[in-house]
Structures are given as C-alpha cells and as structure tokens.
Length: 142
Figure 1 (cartoon, rainbow, N blue to C red):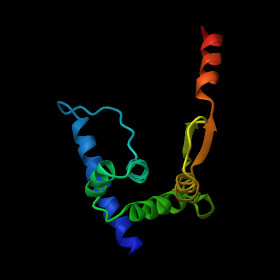
Figure 2: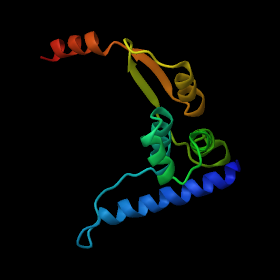
Figure 3: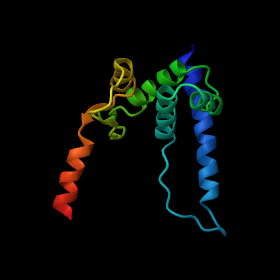
C-alpha cells in the first residue's frame, strides 16, 4: 500500500464532501456559519468501518474508495500523528483535538479494538459506569 496515494485519495474524497456540505448550507445567496473538519470526518468514518465489519464496513470502504480497513486505519493514523501534530516550533499552527471512547464497564471490549483506538487513532479509552454514575448525576441535578 502506498500511504501517500491513499492520503491523496482520501483528501480528494473528503474535500468533495466538504464542497457538498458548503453548497447545501448556502441558501438564497446567504451563507451560514459552518465548522467542518474533513480530517475528522475521515477519522470517524474509518473508525466506524473498523468497528462494524460487514455491511457498514463495505459501505464506508466504497464511499472512501479504500481497499481495506487497514488502509483507512493507516491514513487515519497519519492524519492524527502528522496533520494534527504541533507545528508551532516551525511557525505553524497547533491544532488540538480530543479523541476518546467511553464504554460501559459491563461490556466486554476486544483487546484488538482497544489497541486500534489507542495506537492508530491516538484516542483515550475508558470503561466507565454509565448506569449508576448517570443516576447519581440525575439525582444531584433533579
């Protein structure tokens, strides 16, 4: 796999998507405020393809013109480690992102999925108690 070609192909696809989003948010010659991150859209779709094998994976691979989830994961890893890297030392920007996944502690998570999140997507992985912690929060607020 040529990572450079994969990144270029993914850039072309998400920019086409960005143009579509921008075009659909413009009505009667007026534009609205819009925040859109093609890189983040790519990372989220790649993550979903890796997490949901089968029909969802196939649809995302087709949409992104990728041959495999391995290709998508490699491109996403490149985005997270290179594109979103701190460039302030060379006079460039620093883009901060917060990637994380929270899963209820009652659920079993495959080690390979946790590894993918932490290593390819540089995302925090936390197992939390949504059932009782949410009830405590509701009682405090209510």
